[in-house]
Length: 92
Image (cartoon, rainbow, N blue to C red; front, side, top):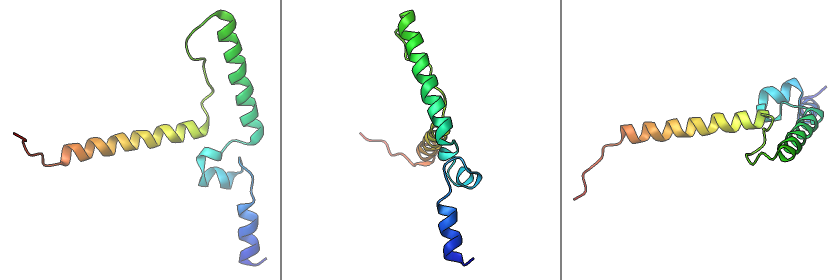
């Protein structure tokens, strides 16, 4: 097998495969697992509405949500670090 064919095979791997999960954690679930999470979300929404709860219904945490949270935390830490390290001048 030549390198180009190997690359084609690797890039064609589905979401949820070990390679894709390692490379893109936000795609670590298979489409079937995503569908189950969507169903769970729908059931929570139905339960909240039937019970008259006005809050946002519970939502299954997906890998892409965890990645987004981690990235947001890194951005916040970067901003705090920049603010702390900046030489501020008093404006009169």
